[in-house]
Image 1 (tube, helix red, strand yellow):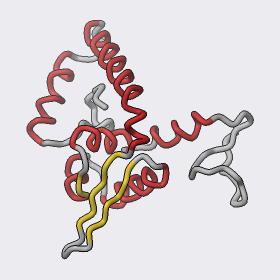
Image 2: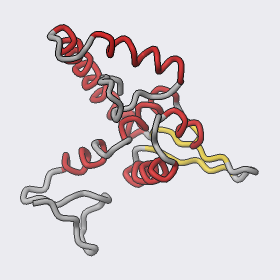
Image 3: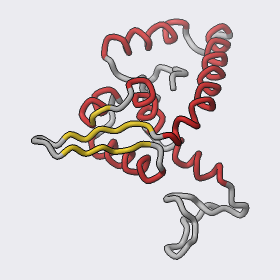
Image 4: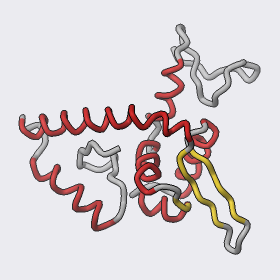
Length: 157
């Protein structure tokens, strides 16, 4: 059974669920598996620091409200930083922190494994060949990150 920590809990991170056997991986996976998180991290990892509007355009299908919530959560967890410039209009830029630099080898391994399994699935006929050819072309044309919510399966980070 998963419970939210009590307000007086001594746990340090937000949304770190308590389980019968507390585990640090629960907190990490709880963040990384939230909808849109990996797409946001993928864009920031590939494009570098990005302003809010550009980030919203590159993460296909995300609303401004959800993007704001996810970025706030990632900032609280120390995965991204927020740079505010008091200009007219205000400029807000988001980028990856050193904490995410530590995740780079893990994400690289996951990307390599995902690509390997995806290719095996295509060869085995579990995924039509056209899907592996379609999403990179759509990415180049639209400049948007692949969406895990679409019908196309991809292994991009």
